[in-house]
Each structure stands twice: as C-alpha cells, then as structure tokens.
Length: 161
Image (cartoon, rainbow, N blue to C red; front, side, top):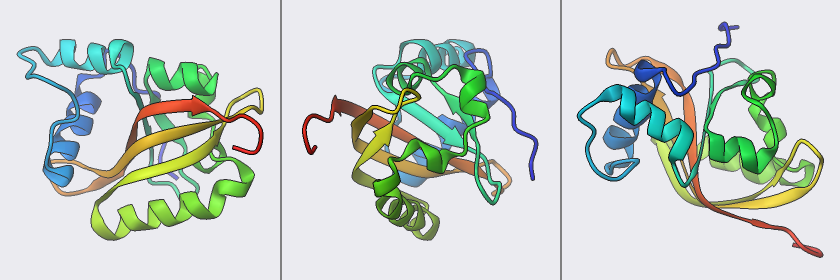
C-alpha cells in the first residue's frame, strides 16, 4: 500500500498534478484564469476555491490524500482525519453502489461528470454533493497517482432527501 501523505496549500507539485490532469482528461481548466505563480495556484485551490476538492491514492481501499478547506468544512474533518479515511466512507451507506458505479466510470474513461450523491459528515449527518466531476490523477510519465473529485455545489438533505 502506498504511503499516505496529506497534501496542503503549499504543495505546488500536487496542485500542478490536480490542474494538469483535469485539463488533459476533462478538457477544461479546473479553476478560472491562469496562474503566473504555482504557489499562488496551490494556495488558492486549498484555501479559497469556492468548490470542494478531494483526492485519494491508488491503494486497494483508497485513502484521501487531499481535501481543500471547502471540502473540510462540508465533511467536518481535519486534514489529518481525512488522511486516515478510506474515500468510500465519504458516501452514505445506502449510496455505496451509486458511488462505486461513478468510480468505475472514471476507471474506464479517465473522468466522469454530472454526478450527484449523498455524503456523510463526521457527525453522521447527510448532505448532497452536486455537479461532481471526478478524474484520474496522471503524472507526466503517464503513471496513475490516484483520483480527484470536484463538487461545485452541495446542499442539506432534509426529510427523505
């Protein structure tokens, strides 16, 4: 199993992997504008992006290696808690089959989008992630480093959801 590392606001190499893989596989930029400074891009993605951004490794039971501040607030986990969390546990128990089908589509195609799914917070409460795009993280040598997902909106689940 690969060693899990928590990537944060200062990890310019990981931010470049997120941005470059998204551009190559999805065909559009992950975030608006161009960044003259890689450190500023990494900081913006982690601290200020108005969307949730998560990434997991390539382990058999993948662990999160990245969660920006928006994702941390939505899920209620610290970066260290995220790093100990298998990504499958972010989905509500009754949403596992749906999540697995979405991940399988990414594995086949390199990316998938248009997903909406139920997620579970640290405190057990449920919420929707919406307008989700997930893609493979592929480095310059063509080696898969994991997968990332961006969710551009989220909402509370009330009643039956």
